[in-house]
Length: 354
Image 1: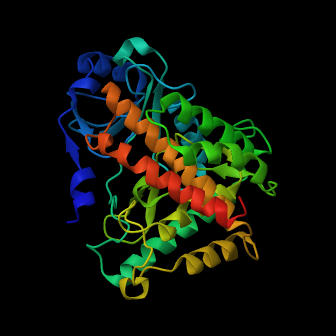
Image 2 (image 1 turned 120 degrees about the vertical axis):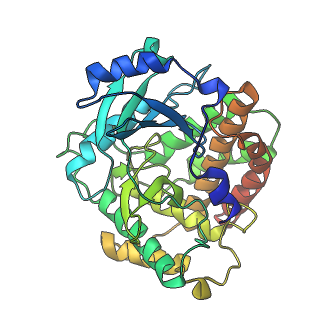
Image 3 (image 1 turned 90 degrees about the vertical axis):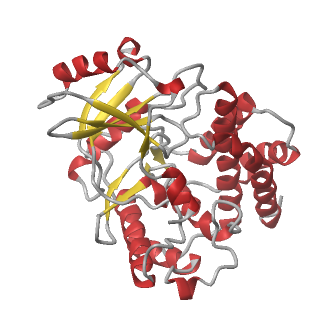
């Protein structure tokens, strides 16, 4: 088992900073979760850096609880209510999601908003190299990811009641503004490249051609795969989802192929053919064929934007770790990633003509 798989898989005792009154939760579930019957056992998932996530076990059923973290939060962050809404709406589409059970917006129950969904038995892969799988299965895993993303971007969001889930148009402008503010609100050191990107990105953004549901954090470890088959059975972690440009999702995932191994276990320089993993070009071609595109232009802008955005997210995780309310024990290590990410993003920006 790889280090990433070992560090993030499974559950642990609930962290001190994330404990709550379990009896109070059980009483709430009796009134709000159909079919619930205790006693209740609560454990916390190791993975995840944003919203603390818990496994809830009863004699007859297992659930997942996902909540806003306690403490002071950045505005518009940790939107568990939006996660609950979008997964509920996607229930009858080709996009696989867990069954949603209940949403609580009363801070008095466990200290912050939360929702409960069914636990899904399956596999979560934290290492994109998939070292525990055979080469042929690795390729099938990536093809299922590609197919799921194309299915998401093909959903008629108005028909499923999500016509007001985000603002139409100017997606990149709004996202650049949002993440610039979030970064500045959680800034802990001076990184010149981030300041350059904040200035350059708004004027470089291409026009938006299509609107779809954008997941916002589409990557391998935000999917649950069938226990034995190379097939996505649930797409999770919708905190950053909105109506937006589908190119943000596909180019965000393509960053895996643009990063070196020491940064997010990137594929840059890897012998992907021997591993059974598609090249970035092959992955992009499959997505374009599934979504009716000829090609995607301005890739260096998208790579600059996505790397900048990821740097801002990582900075927020690190900032929360300093406050003691990050969800994962390795969050403090994220602080070391921000500057290299910013430098990489500025490199893409210069290739795009900055």
